[in-house]
Image 1 (cartoon, rainbow, N blue to C red):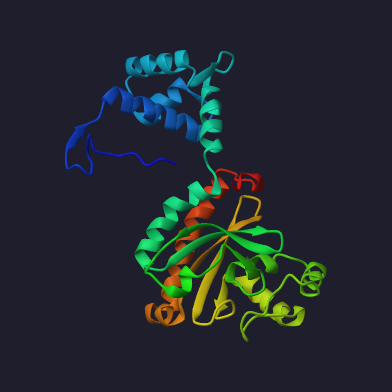
Image 2 (cartoon, helix red, strand yellow):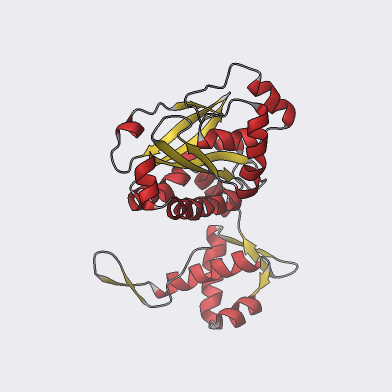
Length: 274
């Protein structure tokens, strides 16, 4: 729900005080009330919003003439008009996973000073579709946009969603890589870790992809609980430990939870990835 300013004057970043248009503000208040309460009568709106009868008549008449609201002539109840359906589809078409995430992940990267990545599953690999740089690092600058599932933090979250048969097939294939001595290369080893990942919804890459590199990842899920993507923080292990793994993890969790709220509210589907 949109937050409304309670004061008549709104202070913008420019420092100027701008007077709101009172009738327009009341009109938006009526629209918001109808949205919250669905089918409502004239009396409901008048009493709950403490609005003058003549003022409310003019507002409702204007909104109805523009198609923003409609009135059921049998019940005399008001509801939102079809115009909002067209507006909603236009807004939803612009809600790609990247656009949704970028507004939350840019501040995260700036705040923690580490690289933040948005990753999706691509066949048997993790594909990075958005990178927001933090402090410079030779290690992070060498990273490629495609990583094996078994030795990346985001990849292990995707692996954890698979059932036992799918996991056996993966580790019996040539899809995984042993990049360091810490890389997980067997079904048995991953099975022990899988329950922990599913329970905590957090995964780590502790020098499993590259020596000296540490990564924390958390999944993004839609309203059906389906994993859409994963967000990760990546940086040199010494710097990550100095800043505090728990501190960075908390920042990641907070940002991802905000994005997940958007994905749930907008009923984001898998085919909206790009």
